[in-house]
Length: 143
Image (tube, rainbow, N blue to C red):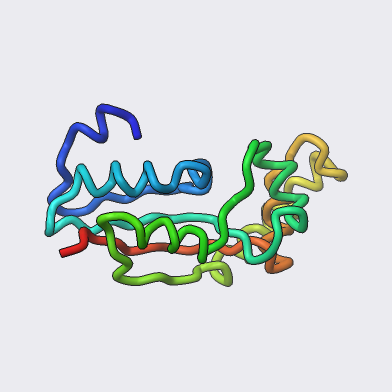
């Protein structure tokens, strides 16, 4: 976590997006979040998780160019359970983002029919094919 962010205490709401870029360091992320929270802090995290094997997520791999796989929900929760944070709520919002990815793919194909350069729709295709899910975690400090 950026030291400028970590050095503060968030007494109300702390929101993070795209945690999947840190799926290889989840224990550290949850430790840092706990250290800059208090008992009133509500933590919301938007995230992509894989629903099967990473090998099946070819579109996500092409777009994200990550050196490690996106975690599954179970892997994220396993790391969370080792931390000082607890899960208050979990919601899968995948069905709400699919219409936007369909539009994005249609528009990108007008400029790049094979999606050689505009690769974001390849991630979207993995979402539409139920290989990647878009989820939101609501966390708080363990009491």
